[in-house]
Length: 362
Image 1 (tube, rainbow, N blue to C red):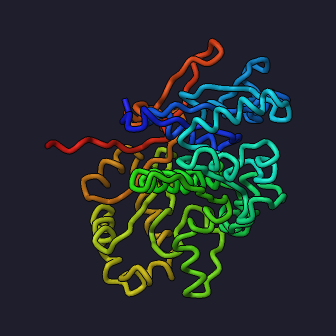
Image 2: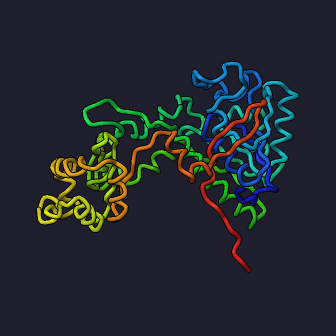
Image 3: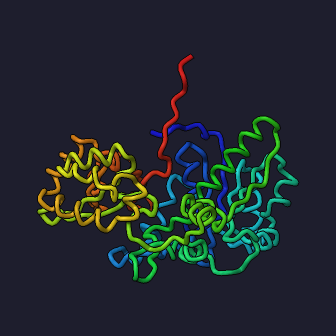
């Protein structure tokens, strides 16, 4: 059971797809009452219909929808209908937090915008999520569009091949984290001042904020990151994948000089330490292909399990490459599964809360 620190908090969610609902689920996992308002005229959140071919076409839910909707109460309302609009307004006015990915102009027409609600409930925290820095920007805003606009798509994939999108809607997830942090700061501020706040984040700003070292490589070194598969532009061997004798694959993530020395000892290639081409990380990045060729031959003599055990003994960071079935064979992954009955179906998803908070002893 996760911490129930928000058991007295009421959250109303005017959000669909992934980012906004992930924020609502975060608070639900921590004990908050979360009411999700969905569009009655379209059958609810669009992701209810985003189904795999193996899913029940007649069900009102999908695996995608369930992934970020847990522990919520659902209200299907038509916000163009005066009665439904009044119900939505009443629910929002009684909330501590409103999460919205509505265009502000649409929210204002429905009376559920920050200004209208906070004029009657000044303690309300209104969390606005948009695709771009201008919340009224009408440009297409699905995650892959933001992956393209923020540079992720260009960088992702194999050299000399077309760009590849990331296999999860990572920009939505990053934006959800930004909005959660903003809400938590606003809750802390409200505890000190008694006043609510308007907090805002966008998918594109969240994506750009997450470019990290790749942005730094451009801003400070004038380097435009290129597609290089799982490899790292600044570290070698890091992200390099090798075939074992049993056909299984192993990935190396050697991030320090000490770990490189341990790798050389593990594979009986200490001679590399005397070669100027491999003595420093900078040299190894420059001569990555030659380094990979040497390591490839020495790794290929081991079956995967024996090699992983050897790497553990020598303290070399490495991993098998797991599919989703293998991921959920891990006990720590199994412990993160949340179940819930929805429409008579047992649904499953992973927790969005990946931390614990234990009260310090007095």
